[in-house]
Image 1 (cartoon, helix red, strand yellow):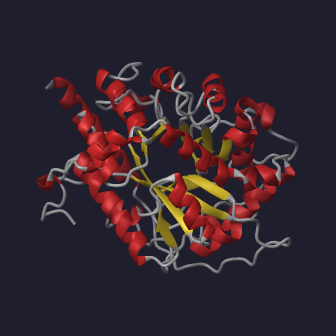
Image 2: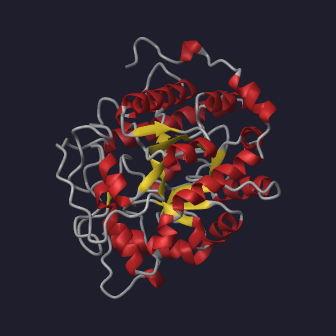
Length: 418
């Protein structure tokens, strides 16, 4: 069909973009700094978006995994692990939405749904063999795991490219996904993605017109609510977000925008009006730590001595969304372990954003600019409240049906794909 062919062509275009971006070098784990004066903060912080198992998603390009030997030692190292368990504890981050990215365009022989299910299985395997992490599949389980002192991962999927029928949502739920980003870099069968995510030229190659939810997308959103899956509208067009909110707001179901910047290209950010609606509905907005040639920081959030390109940008984005949506809605959505360039050294963070060991400097900078310790420490509790609100709307019968579905085995692990 022409529509499917167009989507496939766009997927290949994005795959080419990522292929060109896959440039980097490995690094042995740098020494972590001692905790700053004042000790370790309370265990109440969360991160809405981390690619915990990117080594599997970008095999063989990406090096290292959390708890392993490799750790990026420069903000420009995009293909080296940036997540360290001890550093998370020192920063007080205990709850992480662990995002799997199924880049089907880079996996010949395996479809997008099969890749998503495969990545979820690999995340489960990582947690099983890692002494530092444990998976949680709901708010109650997450609370219990946090109380036991563990670092808790909630499985999420970035991009609904594998969803071609409503039953596919059931399969992702049965495989453990508790949050799904409807779209990623290009339009899919569910919804319209934000245009110009790679700039105007690539935007014309990878996306179509100004669209919203497809008829299937409407069904998918309703099914996610029935199953208790958090709806993540990151990367979505304004029209898509508006149409999602038209379905979730009357039901009292909050949504999240897991990672954004206040001006990461005109269309690759959450607009102020939509940010206010997300916050008013009890949802969450995650501040990403990525740099981009298209990034702009709101002038009104800058201060004397502000240094563009440093973590001052991240602080300014945080302040911008706090002004728009309220402090309770804003938290970290780092996008660590994505193929991104992060804040360079300077400004409020002397070493830049190399890895999770630099989060205390970012948090200190936020406090210096008016974000309270209580707001930072309460982010995990706010994530749990969103999970509970979404779960409260779920139908047990729908969950039972979803758990009984079986994935298409022929699409999971082809022998010719690692």
